[in-house]
Length: 356
Ligand code: NAI
Ligand code: MG
Image (cartoon, rainbow, N blue to C red):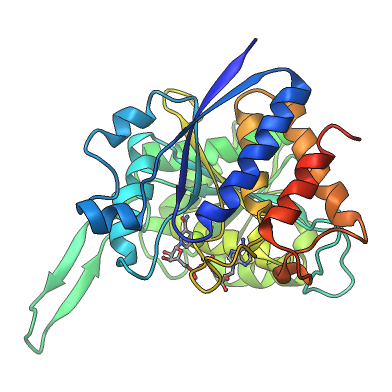
């Protein structure tokens, strides 16, 4: 029997509450589909940092590299500065494993109230492809003249040809694979003098290899407005690290809640494990109460199965989420208008697996 070996990092806050729900959904799915699932838990978190001064042990990356995939909860807590937790765990994993694609669906699910008027499931359904390894998120720069009147900070964005081309190409390939041949590029070439004109020229060049794919591009400001005014128009949206980051929270926001949205950090060449996580963070404001919505984590598990080459399993999980959300008597967590807990909603989805 085929079996998958998964590194599990629940992390901080509600990460530790939603993760068990995703694991039990995966176990049920594996039973129904006839493959095995092996989980290895890593307790790397802000708590670990407070105890050891490290977010993960020195050989952490080599431990992770032994696994087929990584399922992550959320990392970051008020007890530790965010740049320490982020740069100590998430960013090294994304960069050292060349997970240069951050893929995020924007889809209005049944039973989730949409903040936009008159929208129903099916109306909003597109994908964001975010560059995940370079761009605006770099460690190049510094603070100068500290303590003097001319004190300041500089931060350099990095757009290599290699890094730019591979993310653009992925977006075109993905649009092709989806059978939705339309790619929108997020730019800001009227404001950023060097990086975005370069991005635009690479977009134009690469698009020539995909003549059947329709292209358009918008400056990030008007693109943000269009996400709200006419989300129906999008199929695949590609953006730099910063633009993609913002758009991929705006997208789920437009579909009602970030709590149900997943995010895949993908190494397309499969040389390294890819990492799957919910879009949301550790939600310190509700952590410890077991009222967090586990759907983002469960949907992330579905994306993981798709990546591992089990599309049927991925579909079963998505179907279960949609069926459960569509039922009037579903146990709903407070963020989607109910009073149920994390475990009740998680169990309802798990029990639905394989029933359709
Ligand atoms: P957050 O996503 O943790 O919370 C934002 C708001 O959404 C809060 O009101 C929270 O209660 C609510 N929320 C989030 N997930 C929910 C869920 N599953 N069910 C119900 N409500 C939910 O973002 P915030 O507060 O900006 O960040 C908190 C910590 O998480 C920070 O340390 C931050 O760095 C970290 N973080 C980590 C991420 C990751 O691991 N990839 C992503 C985003 C934030
Ligand atoms: Mg973000």
